[in-house]
Image (tube, rainbow, N blue to C red; front, side):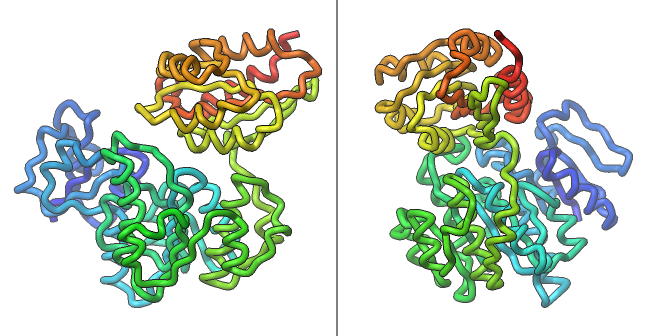
Length: 418
């Protein structure tokens, strides 16, 4: 077959290696390729302008490529990685692995990792956005695939579906990619239309009247709070050590494990460690609280972080590439809090405008380094407040990743500015 690969990055490189091992020579198109070249395996590396749909039998794409990209617009046999490997599994085995997909705006990674921890004794491995590439899962054939599933992957997937689908709360995100919040929600729920009567779905209750949810044929569990899940799935929430927002992640993971395998082992769940840069608390030598929430890259994540510390004075560092997100809910949340903003990044002017409108104290700082210098000068050694880095924006305007941003915040917080 003449197989085209759209995008050559973290997702597609393992796929290319897998297909090469099957004897396939591939045609790889990526915006970073400026002229035709070939790699050591004989794959053609091509600029997108070289793509001809009439010469391509199948196009497998990196899910981050938006639907308005020229390659997607020209494609005639577009296949997601999820669909490709599900087709292979159906062709080669009747004993299919148990698929669990986890999606939502925030908390996907934590919930996926918690679910995998609970189900490891049953043969579970994680994949999708995190963990093991789908090509490796296919080769290793674990009994349970726990896939962190993005709205991008869901948008391009039309055949594959899981036995259990868990959706964390959905808030505005990736709107420029999807075109609208409605489209974003539709993509998050589209998998329900393919799931049969033997499946389970865990869905926010606010979406229960959505057309796709109403058409779902399997067993539906809806929730507003962590307690709803504890009651619906029959476990004791009081024994879980995590606080919100991680308590909801834990309850969803327990619900998945119990529905699929009766594996509601709270003691095992309580050994889980929250990942770096997500509401990561630490203290300096004066015992003052700092919180690295650099992974708070959208409005809802930052709101959750603010609510966690609502009983303190909050010094919050906001800003970066917000991709035109609706900031109104964030400022509505901050309106009645004891809070001051230290703004950084590409959307600083927007933050200043919103802060003036909502009468919230803001200091324009430009960069994280400058914000931290000002905070160190202002903050008393016996302060009982919290300094929170939760930018509600992506990091790529000033950093290589949210990880680099969080690491710099931690380093600067622990510097002795006395």
